[in-house]
Image (cartoon, rainbow, N blue to C red):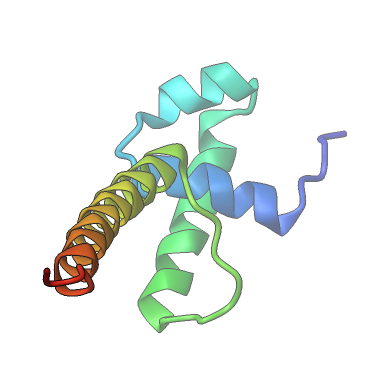
Amino acid sequence: MGKHRDSQFKEYVAKLIVEDHRMVTEVAHELEISSSTIKGWVSDYRKKKKKGSDQETYLTPSEVETLQKQHEKELNKLREENEILKKAMHIFTKDPS
């Protein structure tokens, strides 16, 4: 009798294949799950995605990395703007002697 996996796990595995373009055979080997089982999960995921389901979504490692890079870029820009504003504040608040 096979193991029963929860829907979150199935969706995560399917996203690895669909979103991260991983090979089904590679993921199947890593997780010790049959390729046909994973293909079924991928098929279900694609159908769900096509319907535009707005339920919970789970991020793959590459999606997390992309988001982190975007946030880091934005944070650096804000820090730079903050430093510029601090310098401007000091210039404009100097006592003109």
